[in-house]
Image 1 (spheres, helix red, strand yellow):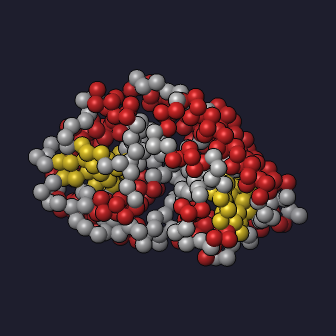
Image 2 (image 1 turned 45 degrees about the horizontal axis):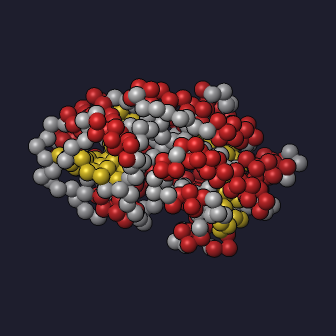
Image 3 (image 1 turned 90 degrees about the vertical axis):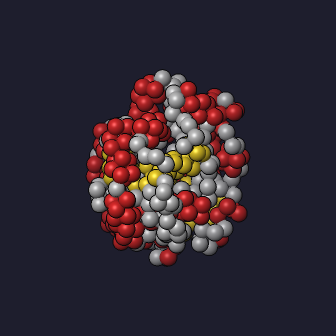
Length: 391
């Protein structure tokens, strides 16, 4: 079985590429990243094809809002379409093609015409459901919402219909597809893994301080206001919330106007994986309170670093966490429930230690990205075999 993968960025696709390469199944992986950004991915350079013409300049902009929402939307759309067309022009004969959603349509058509298998890899909820969730959330907080580009929504929905299979990383994401009318038999839930060679306990939290961490995009989608509301009411004499990730200045102004920022909340910007590993190891708990999140790679990364997690139900938390044993799962959009779990941890150092130990053990039993690669490979093998029996 020969497999081709594509992703306009890098995401989890290169973790899958490594696993397929180890099994002798990877024919090519396409990316919009420049080649030098992919040199440490552990994949032979002759199996990597890059098309960074549009994507690299787009990603290089520190604050995309600076070019204005209209131009930003046009650039993103051109990025997806131009990359998709490049893959379609260049894709070799293969048994299975798995393309990240929004940029796999053109190559998917080519592969289907060749009688191959096309898998749509969607890292979040159904795009129309995602748009509706985010619109409701913005309305609730009184923040203007431009919405996902309708052209992108239509592209993705065409991919969903064209694909032989849609892979998603969480049951939450799968439910949104079923609610939007996609046949459940067409969906496969395969939770993401973690690179255990990059994330492991390397330090311990300061026992005199209760340290909370968030890592990811600092946006309404990630539930940041709920975390800040809970943290502001947390009763502890020495508490600290560290937020790692890129933050839009306008969103920070909104948070500040709501009185949600103070000296006990620090922003450290985007960190490399080594920096995240250290930060997670030194923290008592990672919180991912997303209102919409396909999975949240930081969940497994934090657990592998010895940091238990609190995650919302609208994420991969329920797929990963045994609530009360190696972390907690809380209702989406509930700062009160989030506060209760944070207070439990702040008041009980012995609970923090027990969860920390259990979190590391849980992630290590998952086998890093090996299980993800094995499951995806098995799905592809079955689809390829069924396809072969039809011809």
